[in-house]
Length: 593
Image (cartoon, rainbow, N blue to C red):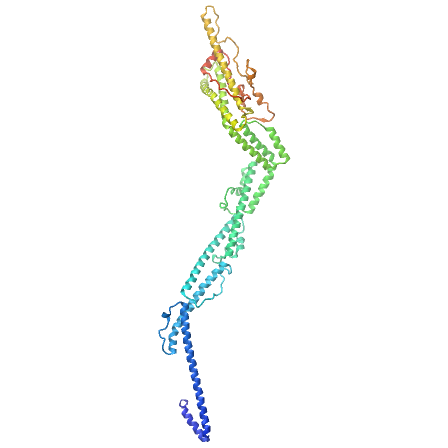
């Protein structure tokens, strides 16, 4: 068997073969020497192989120790806890002792590396989305991980960074959605296509795309901000334009007295006339076609305004004349109408300028009327009191005023009120004079009442009232003289009796006539007839006086004199007037202006 063959048996067999062959000793020694050398070479090779194997094991042990140390350093683990307890024994024993620890740490390293790759990939993904280098949902390349530093502290740093980036991504997405909502609102109000507007910023902003896939890059946010700012400015400009058009529509409507039905057709335009930018939210309320519609209507009304210019201007002129008439200011209406007609036919002035000028005149006229209102109210009270005074004079001349006829008690009550009112006339005139003078000093103008200076009217009234008082005094003296004569006649034995109902003289008391002059010997220089002055104006002059009142008080109507007004004497008692009227049988002098 092969197992029984040894070097000695083979050497013996070789000796037998040499003996048979008859080899010499020298040849035999050579062969044996050669065999020794060959055996030595074999041993050397085996030793070399064993040495190399040992060196490899030592190198493997050293490498394992180095790898173990590197893993411990990379993972941040403590060397004492992870180093094998057995550090002696054969090389293979040491390798066998370190292999499980090395395998566990290698596995832990690979797991830690995957965690780093995962976190770093998410960080790179979000950073790319923010920078705009990659689209949302696009996969990034596998990041390079530093395998020499896989500690938990570094992993936590990456996780903290990822958490901050995820928070920023969430905030950016919220801001993007807010911008998109604002764009939608603006487009709705402005009547614009929302989809084309928002996708022009970035295609991912379409509503059909989920929120997680929308772009959150700096460029997208910047474009959205500019888009919102542009739309906001467009909304502001359109609202300003629409409000301007609405104002023009209202002006033209008011100018031409447009009916409510025609105005309601543009309620969707005028409803935002005074609204702020944030208050306008109705869909399409600032659309371009709506603004164009308003512009067309303004142009139409503006052209129509030229054709109705004459009617509008004359209407304004009538309003102006009514204000002056109410304020008792005389103006030349015919000249004003001719001037307006000449301006319109010449075409030298814009209709809007003409209307604005007339509106300015109307405003000034209203201001003027307001400044005169207090004085005019007192003038009305004065004239009303004068009417009552005139009625009282007529009432006192009525011999049957105390009869129990129908309505006599009403006239009696009116007479009592009239006497009270008449007693207030002097104070009223004095107040009126003071206010009129203050008004004239303040404005440097004469206060005209239906073309006549008011102070002259008051001056003439006071003068006529004084004359009346003097006439009444003379009549009372005449009455006393007649009574004395009657008493003397009754006492004399042969005197003739004179009827007490007939005065000694049939001459009437002095009083103003209806034309303003004073009858029966009144000095010419005291005759102040105003009727000629009031009617002396040219054709077309409009006055605001009340004809009924002025006719009733024309006898004492004020003259054209601004002189000082003397304090009038107090009116006599009504009872004495009644007695004088009954006794003398003459007509008292009218006391009305």
